[in-house]
Length: 519
Image (cartoon, rainbow, N blue to C red; front, side):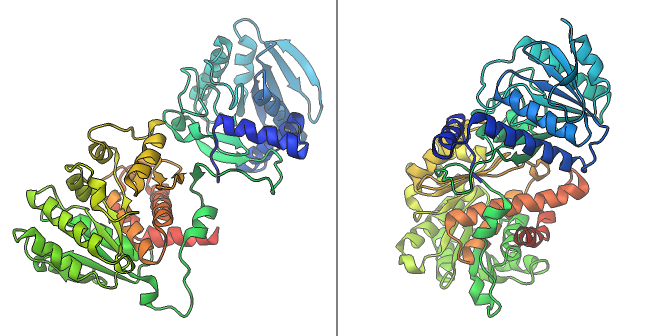
């Protein structure tokens, strides 16, 4: 699904009228109807007798809210509209096109306050996509009353039309008066700012409503939202006449005496997404430990940690014949010998014929080792997949920081992918996947349950398992991020947003794949 900027949305609406004769009132009618349908379905379809208070702004967003209110009235909801421009309260009766009664909200909005005490649903239709100015004081006051009533009565449900008023649709910045929605029904396409913090924290559940654009209308390429239909098309096929060789071999170079679990998590994840064979490169002593939990894996036995790093790297390279993917970095530690070890592996990979070279995923301590070199990206085969978190990304950029969820991430991910010539999976609240050719995808929703040690190791292994099955680097990174996220949501739906352990994700990865295929 495309994610659009304000300018892109304006151009889409301009084209809708110029090319298809879809005027603003026509789009508004379909938009309001769509929001009403989505809200009614979200609340179980029973809106008869519900009290709905709609905060109506002066522009198209307010117009969408009015149409929505009319449709809700037709299915039995009781409507009170607060018109910001006139400061009037309009009481709608059933399917009537006109107000049954109109009263002043009062200079202190006492009438609105009174209406909110009876509200089951509050509709935020004050300002939409095209408004980046600060909220008017009266808008802030109206939203503040709604928020206060929600705090007093937790059952009040807030739905935002297109986006929460005061949220910048391009940057994710929010006005101090913006209130969080329980449900945001964004119209036609999601807007960039909905996925950037602090705005992303105000969105609640996100759904996309229709405005009546014709299905044949072409939309230029740009930022994409990872969703089930997109990822469904990226997953490798599983033919009936297959065998383990069909789904490829992946080697994992990970783990150290202080970080034993990282190798297990990455290796198990590669198998859980469907790789035909997973091989862990480790010492004989540690292989005995891993075999107790990872009995399905094979092992590439390495010289001990204190051996010559080049000899250890050579053991990896000699074992790579026939492998489609190599994951390197999780839990290797930052010991002085690690840099020489990974650099020797990278040199060996570059020397291989391209047809024999496995796809490379570089994570964690392998990224840290690289970051100590100038023009480090030249050490890697082109189109490697890099999976840095914000701290690792800062080190790769020579100390230039990047946020965990702000607007700066979009430009940083795209520019670094272009300059370095590699796929970037920039981890954070809403992970980004960027390709050297300019492709950019974003994941949603954020999940604080995943903010725990080891989940990044699971992600790198999942990407490696998908690469082993023949996915392209950009698609493997995208599908890996989405499946990892869905697995996390499946766990947090059962236990909440704290207490998830990285290993909990492993049995959920194949369930997430089945969920995507079912969708």
